[in-house]
Image (cartoon, rainbow over all chains, first blue to last red; front, top):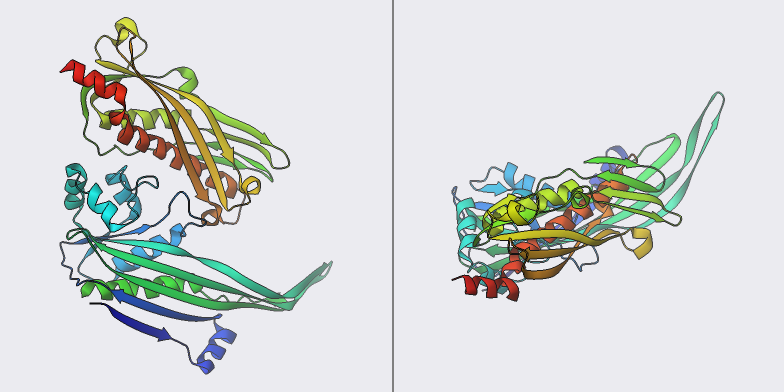
Length: 225
Length: 192
């Protein structure tokens, strides 16, 4: 059974205006969850978050995004454990290196017939692998700023804005049952501003951090079943 | 890892560790034979308009190969030469760098630093008879967007990451594919 759930998070215009002026840029985000199988997790289970970075991809998912999702999951008040990408790849080397990493569940099923790999995954207690792909891009900028300095001092005058957009997808595999159990997509976009009257005041839209937080929350909810 | 970078180019001295491959060991004692050129290897290149680039990875590739051999064979040890020095081993694994290449993002019009290292891997009986003569072409890359930091070490850090990925790729290739090479399979069958 497939359940498609849409969750849209749109800040109220007034709040956005206030936040824009006093704290930072606005971020709009949405998350889609596609469930293809049942989940459940216990305190004995471990989750690993991996970047789906192939040798042929045009872009790689940012290392700090992968780490952020892993850390957020690990810090959450959840009963399961989270192992870092680096530790998992070292302990299962060379099976998850870019050249040999399984791209689909059926490739993983074939690989895991290797008893040494199966044994190591069991030893690590890994129940779920979360593969993440996607990036955050700068999608445009506008405005201008002029800075001048003289003997007595100086300053800047102008207004610059730029927009970032992120799109990430997490594919979740149950490696105990050898099945792909769902996908979570996270989109976020935001505009950052930097007005300057003498001193530039950056108001940054934390697009990637927002996408990370949303993704981690949804993964946690998804795994809980 | 020591990094030095200027407006163009970078100097990188690799000092990393490498994991033990998780593969079924070949049931032999292998002697690992590498020379000073291998242990002191550095790729040096001057790229027009983009400065001088140097990445020293001789010590790292020696550590990588030692770890690979430890996982790949039932027993592995370093040896100093062929003949008497190798008689304790069943097979000698000899490794040389055939060539190395680096590409910087400005050359490829991508976000990536790329590193290619081609190795000649030989398996020899202690008396010198060749069992396997195999070329391994390893590749690694790193996305510069992961290394955008204030300061001047961005290029060096990205190049180091690409080199490390290439060395891991070499280890992965040797660990996964050496046991499938016809030369070693035939030799093992004859040994039974």
